[in-house]
Length: 145
Image (cartoon, rainbow, N blue to C red; front, top):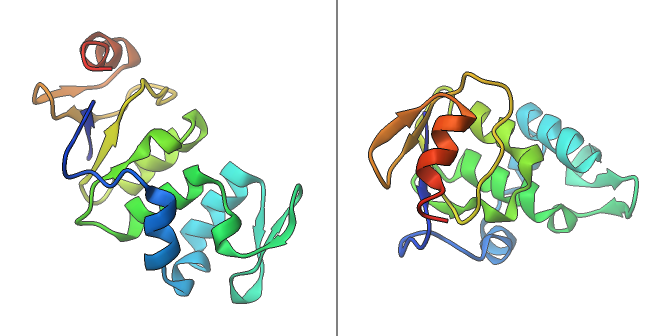
């Protein structure tokens, strides 16, 4: 299940780009699930050896990925860390839900993210409530962002 804490969270990692730069592992980039995320969010194709073909930037290393994709990759692989997912746009929301389908993941948000088609299941940690719709999510999360 996806767990979200809205607002300031001391233990959250806010500079996801710096964390990614020093801690990502090359094999993460070539995982099929990650390739799919990169294609969907950044419209880029992972080639051999972790080189990414971007329609805008040409051939780039993993460090050239968008902040949103970097954060998604960290959430997927660094299971015991909490990342500020405010670098993610709404196009990352479905991937956060997919990552948390089989294993709980906690993220920090400082904005209201649109999680797309309902129903979904999100645990809002600020109030210890489970929500299943955008209406429920906004009515609670709006108090904290």
